[in-house]
Image (cartoon, rainbow, N blue to C red; front, side, top):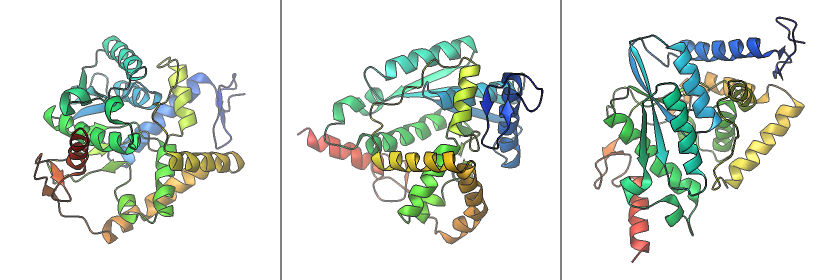
Length: 303
């Protein structure tokens, strides 16, 4: 029975509270609003660009933002989809995203690996770690397009599970520098070459997002990318899911305690001097950025 209105529940939260559809949707949207407010993710005047993939997380965060800022002329919300060129997967995601954006009158921008880099992920993935290559190229393209489109913030669908996994992975690998760059708001506000990124779903568990997407009829399936074979992250995911099952609230505890030490990490870790890549002139911590190193390696392997 729903704890708040005594009707039939649809979900049991990690706190043990059971909620019906109406109470859950209200709870979900209020929690996202609180994250935005407490962590000052969105100002009074913004041009928000949501990085969408067609999956539950990105469509859910877009749906919530459209609801929160409906009628607000000072907050513009549009979407950006990166087409990596994954046959049998990305086409369906593009179709679903186009349908959603058309229905909700959201401007959808699409950028592709093939157009920007001259190849699809499918063509260059053999013999390489697909997630590593895609991650670097995708992040770079998101930043470039967000800047070109005049976005003041780039919105991503990262959730509580994602962040808990990354925190633990960084701890196990002793990568404090990477940890210092985490949090619901990232990027340097004093560097115009980088568009700051925000994660409104930062404290939302994957289970709750799946429920929200299902109840709002946002997506009918939750297919993952066929190249999602990061065995290390998958092992961390399985471990945390097991702990969450045995000790509800584990993921939230990891992220909330991390948030307490994040300011100290940011002070301790030296911020690398940002240079300009000698090849593409995009911001980089080294003479040649990771994107160009990958592109050069791919170009060399073709000869």
